[in-house]
Amino acid sequence: MNAPLLSLSRRLRRTPFSEGVEAAGVKAYTVYNHMLLPTVFRSVTEDYRHLKQAVQVWDVACERQVELRGPDAGRLMQMLTPRDLGGVVPGRCLYVPIVDATGGMLNDPVAVKLDEDRWWISIADSDLLYWVNGVAQGWRLDVLIDEPDVSPLAVQGPKAEELMARVFGDAVRDIRFFRFRALEFQGRKLRVARSGYSKQGGFEIYVEGADIGMPLWHALMEAGRDLDVRAGCPNLIERIEGGLLSYGNDMTDDNTPHECGLGRFCDTRSAIGCIGRDALLRVAREGPVKQIRPVEIHGDPVPPCDRLWPVMDGERQVGHVSSTAWSPDFETNVSIGMIRMTHWDAQTDVDVITPDGVRPATVWETFWI
Figure (cartoon, helix red, strand yellow):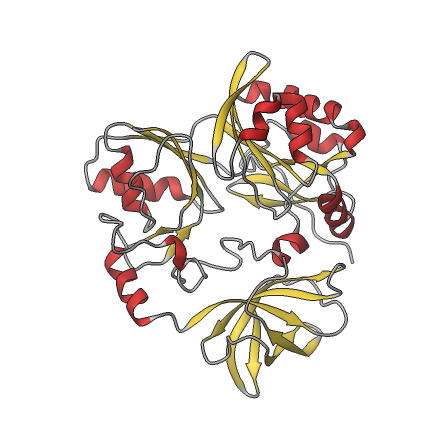
């Protein structure tokens, strides 16, 4: 039986790089922030192997930017997150949980500080623009909020730095992790950050202006021919091995940052002004009763995980698995689970109810890479 097709329309926005993605033979998409996000080119496994060995160019324009600009931009940014932003200087990128008044996760973006009165929030898959506008209006803040014409393009893999140096010059080699610099491409200044949604290392280019999208794509592809550069995308296997969470998949607004293993990004005592601060202070004091953990599902490869799979101890449910894939490198099913504190210790044996039946599994403390 053939899988159903995705009906395209203007509500599913193309990106400045769609022409290149299609020419590269994209085989599947998902919908992310009302945009097309590639998920497979050759195969998930072949894309995984190549990502770990060479270099890929990813169309991640779906990571839309919410721009805050004006005298209260910094105040608003701090209201959104429990991470203390005091002392952060322009040129920094920060992973920031965004929470509501109950401490529930609304998004887990990267915040980019452009200037003292200007921020970009590079968002995960949720309509954060509406929440930010509501907060600003409710508090009558002096700030302009917009979605600018900015489309991220990622370059990921062990050969990413060499490729980027060929296109942007050796200055990229000096960019530190989660820092960015404005570098020139065809007379245009583009912000280049050492960051990305993989554990293989790389960069994200904040392409300001859709017109320069395909010239940059072609330049990267041409410069990387001898590096075996290919079009790629966030890889399911590699992200689970590395414990990279997917908002809407592995966490929702029902979860606090502490449940998601993001407590280290919550400076609740010093992040004065955060909307969810009081709720998270209670969570930090009492501790979470469940938390994200790596789960190894034993046996043959399991089918795709398109819903939550119960994690069981006998007849009692003690959690769920939200993402899983067969890892060729570790020769096992690697998974992300939300596990109750009674069973989250390393080497705890449990069962997972999969579409193929009950499978033995083991909870671990750290992810595979």
